[in-house]
Image (cartoon, rainbow, N blue to C red):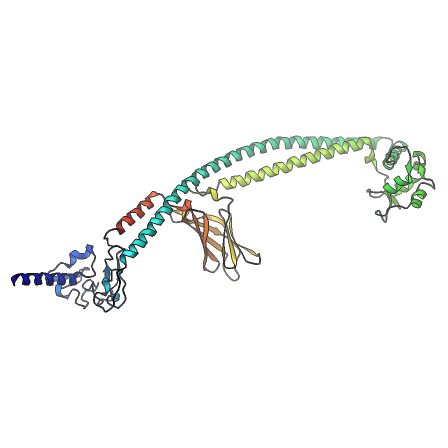
Length: 466
């Protein structure tokens, strides 16, 4: 009989103790030891211990009713063994809905709930293990991309040095070709001046007549024929029309051929005036056609070659300088502490969302294209915009095209850890302000974060509390 009394007393003591500490975490259990009185945790009031969890709120902070819904600001602790422990508002205690996966919040209701903590814990641990694997793989790939970035950086530095050397060599050539062109231009001018200084009478005229005659005499047989006139001579009003045979014969003085002497006294006069006929491909009269002089032609050809050579060198020099400017600009961009983001330069990533295709070209611009092909700028590369502790976690693209009755379009790119580099989502939380999620291995954090995940996994395998 005495044994039965002892057992009953022990059972009652356990039940009372269980009632008193329900909804309390281990770290707060010391405040709820069986005493004559209970001090509210905020120190505002002392109440008899019997009033703890009596379904009546005595403490302003609700600490006397951790296991009931009596206090509006109270909270109930879900132990959730096998899963993550957490607090819920005490108003949810015994409300017929299971909020704790271990069902401890519905201890005095008619609701039957299945304890799902083990399954939830298993799923979360599996998810965390997957995140760990992703992180480990991402960190491995990140190291490769860092090494690739170092290699690319060195290549670009070498390329810049080589281009600068090429530019110096072209500068020397440029000066040399300018001297050659100036020399050729002076020689041509001197030749012209020399010809102008010569006898301006028959001697010069004969040279011009002879030159035109040889130009018409295609087969160099000493005479101009009907066929040669038809091939080289045309009416001023209609150069495209080929002369008829009768028209060519008429120009040849009624015959079918003409020597230099006859040409000088007949056909030359018509060609010189340029009123009705002309040599195809020329403009107007031939009175001042001194360029047909062999010396003038030679000097002119030399000047033209010098000008063409100079133009080629100038174009090459300009192209190299543009490449130097572009490469220098790229080398001044901040590609991360270890230049891990350098591999993204000259790359673009696309994502289609409904009727729009979004294109992100890191360190350049962001665009949006609709199904009709209309493209809109959502911003140009601005700066890194992450937190002070992780500034390379966000990119900012600014000064895109203005919205209709709205602000200028801007885009924030959030970089997240992943095993490949790809756009994952595009959102527009406010008008013309876009947020993109770019997943990439180089956004994975160093092992310190990995240790935190290991700790979280380890903690969830045993009983723990917040």
